[in-house]
Amino acid sequence: AQSVTQLGSHVSVSEGALVLLRCNYSSSVPPYLFWYVQYPNQGLQLLLKYTSAATLVKGINGFEAEFKKSETSFHLTKPSAHMSDAAEYFCAAENTGFQKLVFGTGTRLLVSP
Amino acid sequence: KAGVTQTPRYLIKTRGQQVTLSCSPISGHRSVSWYQQTPGQGLQFLFEYFSETQRNKGNFPGRFSGRQFSNSRSEMNVSTLELGDSALYLCASSLGTGRVQETQYFGPGTRLLVL
Image 1: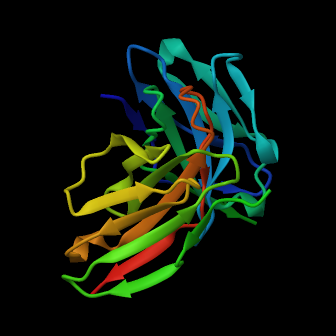
Image 2: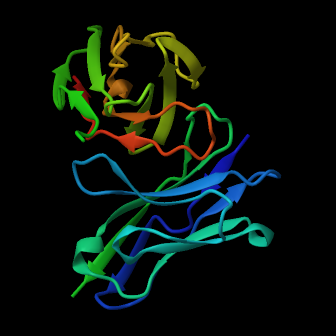
């Protein structure tokens, strides 16, 4: 069965520093991959998604992710963190066609001034 | 275009009661999926409805059920509530084309507290 692993339940960065959130998937068949962000007391907002068109995917709010099949990874990055980036980030995979997303456990990003 | 709406936003119930949550998808979306989010188990898929039919189901007991109406609005019901059912219930809608890369758009969720 498909599974998604997010390394680090919490990541702390300073404002202006590089953000790197890690995501690995387990599947012999690469799934379609998504990054969602969740702000307190809100639902999930799509940041970006990988659909095999390009390995480097650019999303909203300056985030991007690179799909690396050899490493079964889809890490999320942002060159310069902003205070407003503080939230929980979820990596998800889908390969069934039935809208059944499999989520990682989430990484809470903390941004300090 | 209005986003996914869920009602109510907050709910408090006691053990043994039942509860019904509602979800209105984005206009034109025909697929509605439900997820449960808890601190211990994270985000877990409950079920997906398309054209009033359940297309896929997660690993939840039969106390969890749902339905979809002809206007694509969906409801989920939890009977005989247990303390462990306390969670944020998220609804997501998508076009429902069956393409694996289809984006799901999430509502704000209904937070259920079972006492």
